[in-house]
Image (cartoon, rainbow, N blue to C red; front, side):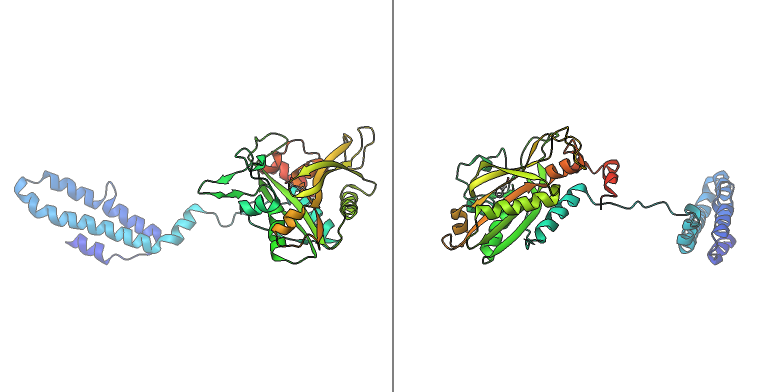
Length: 334
Ligand code: PHE
């Protein structure tokens, strides 16, 4: 009884005093275990009278210790586990990703001649990614081999190019249109040092009255000389895209091994940089633009390939692994 009173009246907030109290009553050599030892030695008929109050005392003591500890609690555990006087660890400064460095530079070059930036969804419907762009029903690019379809709805896919954004722009704006569409695109291709199933594009679109192939060529020459250096030569090779007619591939000449430029260490002659062409009249009509009044050109380039050339990166996978040892090398690159 006396012990129970002592327990009930005990009130401390100091952690050390609470611990002292706990050891006194509940510790291995404390009062309560000692009472239990005595209890065990009692004859059977007396056990009943002593057992109940003894258990009550034990429970009351445990509850008291828990309660007092909880009240003194938080501050106590901080003191025990953390040294607040220790100096903090270093938090490293991030840097821009090489893909973004190149993408931003491309955007800036086109902004200087009046192009704006447009963006669109990465999950697209068949109309914006293919049909409006004049892809025939049986075109291989629609194949499961190349396109990631959304399992829930076969009309949806991850866009395979940002030409889909240009369709949206043409549907929603009246010419003149002068826009570039940077963004992530997806193709169901085997991953290797040269290609990845995710990459970035910057595509361009210009629609107005009397736009000619000469305008396209001059714009691309301007871009190539701004980006690769002012003596850069370009060439256009005939090519095919469903949405442009005529279509071409643009190559830039970046020197042979013995004609080394200041930022290119091993030229291999002509480098293929982008696809381009005059927007097919069918595409203009699909998007609600009168093809008798307006004409236009379009082009599209892969950012990773240009970044690999710019920074002499030999394996495209390095651009997606986010290995800090790789990324840190671009800290000084603006
Ligand atoms: N959309 C094409 C591609 O993904 C690139 C391109 C854009 C070609 C515009 C011509 C005109 O490769």
